[in-house]
Image (tube, rainbow, N blue to C red; front, side, top):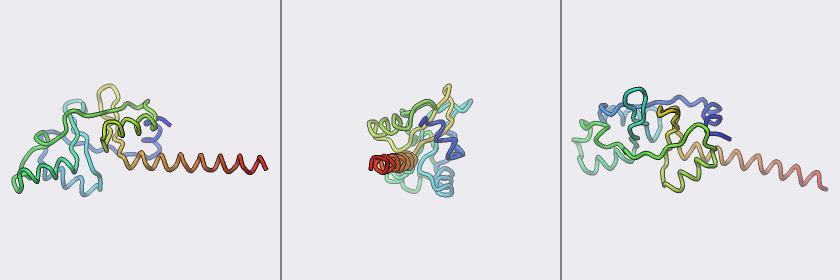
Length: 144
């Protein structure tokens, strides 16, 4: 299955943030949406980074109460591992494992069109395993 098919099936509503936003506003949005990261987009929806809960926690450890006033650009991860819409879910899973990332922005012509989380990949993997199990079960029944 391609990433684009997965995103369409999940009817993902992409939420992004801007580098100028405050950490406080982003933290509130992450909490309200119950998500772990947001792509950070500049002009024309171009990806400039990712801000995650982990970035916020590290910022809190460093800056304490002053963190709320800081900007996303101060804490975001700038070197972002990405995939495109035609990447297969298996390739995305492997990429996330190899690069040790939990969130994988999906880009098309330099613009962010989705965000895969490790939870998304695990949900896909569970579904794939169920399908394989059913096929094997059917083969066993037929061969009797």
